[in-house]
Length: 450
Ligand code: PLP
Image (tube, rainbow, N blue to C red):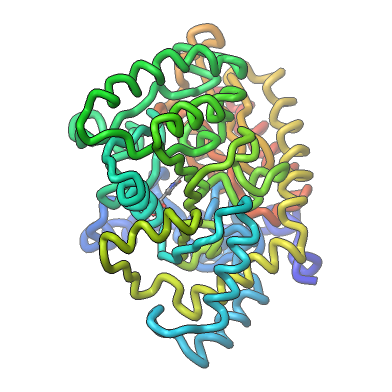
């Protein structure tokens, strides 16, 4: 099969390690001169990546890197089965979503079948930001209310609605100064740092949630709902306190609000032990948003909800996305789902994720810089702190470790509000050898002392 012909990371990376680092500063300067979106990059000189294969990336000089941070490329880079499916559909037809295609119907059916019972209506869009904007519009349309709760330290996208509920200061510094008055963030239910540490701290947050809901009760525009990730993507895959969402969802629903689960990063099998992130919290949302991995890099997003919620948008008139639900997009979505199933990728995320987490926890004993290893499956975070009591974030060390990892052949990126967490979200086809290679590379980087 495809995996079998993929070279082992040991061969690939040791051969490639000798290749000189490409100086892409000139390319970066060109890009910054004309590429308008102010996109953050994490390396002093980012590698100039030319192609990918399985969980590996190659720069223009042929140097190989293990891709440990790509939460978009779910099934691996350049999967031949996906390439063939795209070529076949593209060569026949790709157009907007005005017509009826079998693939659109089939893809919507498959997504509805994966969602909990009752969530049967699917909107197809092109990104996570669009999906979250649409979810907020659905909550507004269905409840006839406006106010939305969200969590501090969260990220949901960059379009107007999703940006408004994104409060992570690392990703959206604007959130501190320009928050619309319908947005109400809750204290971050971060089980590692913050006012209420620990996995059993759900009850400690609830007084604050109730107080906030009571202030919203007094507002004329009322409560439309909450948008939240069921596990903290931005904070490095950290779990919410046990029982937190069940209590919050109950309080929201008592007031007629809807509960939106942003599964853009956490869902689709990445947790290994669960297909959906909300299963970890034992809740069923009213609206699910997905994107990223479902298209393996092809722009694809979706909102899955109950029929009556979907229909409430009709009151508002017309909804149309030119490319959401295109023939090629739908074929990509279907093929990615087939590959996840046929290659057992959720199971691989569970097995390799468990194995990787054991390796990372092993490093904690030797290197006190590691404060915690968060997450499960292939949704992990290694948090670096200067002191285990004060949890002072080791931000500069994290950045230096990422640079060192790049030299050792690993692509990595810091995450979290303090940019002191390694964001470990590799393709779900990661092999045990690659997981071990990563732990070894991190060990070598930490041995340098930071
Ligand atoms: N929601 C979450 C949890 C995300 O991590 C992201 C992107 O990073 C988004 C939404 C936005 O998705 P997109 O970048 O596809 O618009």
